[in-house]
Length: 100
Image (cartoon, rainbow, N blue to C red; front, side, top):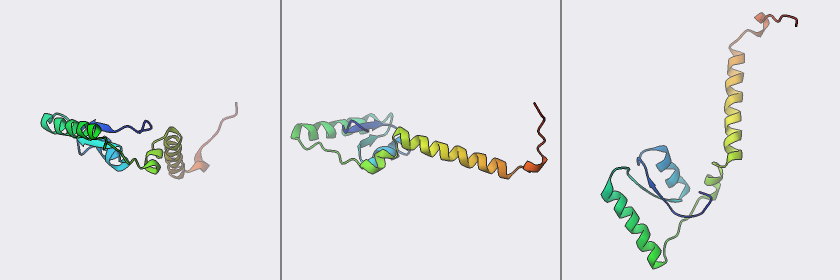
């Protein structure tokens, strides 16, 4: 995504990768295993490139949600939420600690 080059996603068109490609505007999607569909997508990209009209309009804000910093923050928040839920479900007063 960061290369700002068009992506030809040969993936299940109803999957997460296809959704990401469409949402971020970084390329086109063709169904995995459907050769005519893949060929059409490749030919379309090639013709646009030859004509000098091959452009992508990436949604930079959406793409930035996938950078490692944002993904790490989201993962940390998920873990924090899991920890808080676990702690709420326990009666902390009944936990006995033993001296070392």
